Length: 88
Image 1 (cartoon, helix red, strand yellow):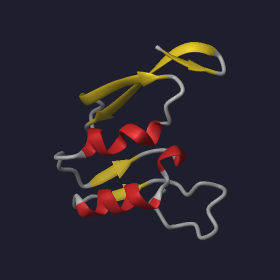
Image 2 (cartoon, rainbow, N blue to C red; image 1 turned 120 degrees about the horizontal axis):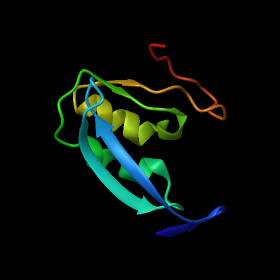
Image 3 (cartoon, one colour; image 1 turned 90 degrees about the vertical axis):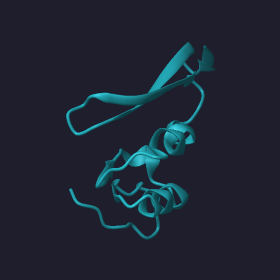
Image 4 (cartoon, rainbow, N blue to C red; image 1 turned 60 degrees about the horizontal axis):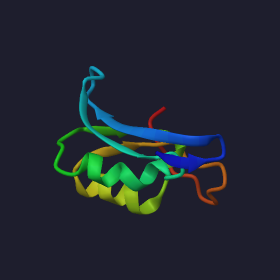
């Protein structure tokens, strides 16, 4: 249990395959940011693409995904000065 603006809550972070079968999961307190669990969920998995939402738009994570041999499909955050390209 963690504390967030809405009170006590828990986040479930999950990596899934192309058929939405869960591969790994982590539980954190509601106040933790999503990206803090991303590398742990992805390390050692082989994939062609990693699809995530804007919350995961960070250069270190994108570099990590590329180093793992996958193509990141992550929209640029609205505040990013130089948006990167991705396959919509």
